[in-house]
Amino acid sequence: MENSNYNTKVEKFGKNSAKATTSQFFGFLLDAFDLTMILSTAPVLAVVLLPPTTALLGAFTIILSYSLTIIFRPFGSAIFGHFGDKIGRKKDLIITILGLGLFSTLTSALPTYASVGILSFVLFVIIRIFVGTFAGGEYAAGHPFVMEWTPYKFRGIISGLVQGGFSFGALLAAAIVAIFTGYFGIAAIKAYAWRYLFLTTLIPVVIALVVRLTMSDTPAFNKLKKENKIKKQPFTDLFRKEHRKDFFQVMIYMTGMFFFAYSLFAFVPTILEHAPSVFTYGEADTIYTYSLGTAFAGALFFGYVSQKIGRRKLTLIWAVLTLIVTVPMFYGAFYGAKTGNVPLTVISVLVIGFITQAPWGIIPVYLSERFQTNMRSSGVGFGYSSGIFIGGWFSIYVPLMHDYLFKSIDTPTNIWFSTAMLLMIGAVIVGVGMYLSPETLGTEITDDHNIKNIEETKENKSVSEN
Image 1 (cartoon, rainbow, N blue to C red):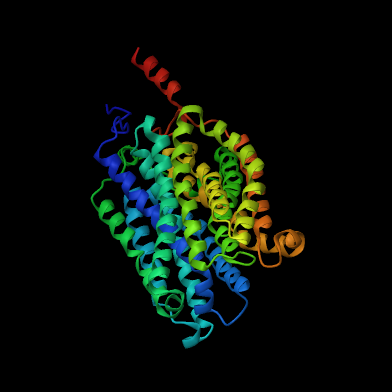
Image 2: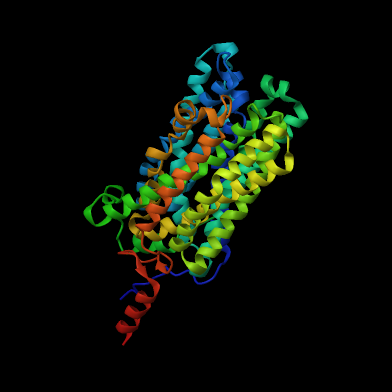
């Protein structure tokens, strides 16, 4: 009789673990790289792809177009999550990196508004829809892939490292935008050099693809396949009675997490670039780039500490801390930009980057621990993306708060207080979502029936051996 624990335990961090980590780090890096290219160049793309309008309105339109494409991420998560549980994580990941890379790079080939009119913006939105679809599949298969290849004691720090790939991708993209702007000048960027920016997305695509082509699928998935325990409908099973409560808890939590993310990625550049800020576009982008360094460090920190004290406890503490520091830090960024106080602006933005992105450090491991192996890609992918249904419309919430509630505090041309409110609302939602969750630290993610505590699994083995 075959051993029921056939080839599922990854006891040490070896070559396959390193490859899986590299694969998902660069895959997730590409997602953020593309996102940050769009958001950091929003003022430029508004000039290139849209008819003449006010700078703030043009930037909002580009950001809104990205929100619309984000809504397609759940679609990609549902499709590729389902097939990740049916045909394997590796095959899924090769398809998603090729699709994500292709459509991200196609942005560089877009015609301008001057040449084809509004069709340029329509084509841009279509490309963003495909990018969103493949991005949703990227983490649906990728997060379970790396966690199933990671030994238990390293899951927290590897989760933080992989998720930090997103912040590092944003950092890299922002740095490239700053370098290109400094080298070419803003006039050349608006004229033609913006195309060169989007061609750089090919770099992480090639790295991730080469690594993935040399890997095998995870021991946990191979066990399911060997024992013929692949679910027929893993995606729809998420909504069965026994799993429905877990899914909706994750959905609440992820809704708040998207408010955390885009408080930094979507709106801090806008706060730094628009009046009454006195910074130039290049100066604002450079300062924003600094925040992405602390975002990367924050994800590592959060993942590591969660392995010591628990995912749930750390997140609840962080939600309270966020409520305390948000308004002072966003005001510091706004006031520093208004007065040209570089040290104040930099310190404020560094703290914002750390506070908003650190909690993301547990997402790969936490979501992988919430769903069993034979529906993990579906659960992780659609659970992750489910936060988009409400959280993805951040580009509408902030302008509405600005126009109808906080314009006198924001000033007519800035959105610092409205963005702070978005983050505080996110902190409350994250706190509620995690309060409803069990602690997942200690979960055995290689079990293919139900998630179990490692100690319980060990006790059961001991009984069966006796």
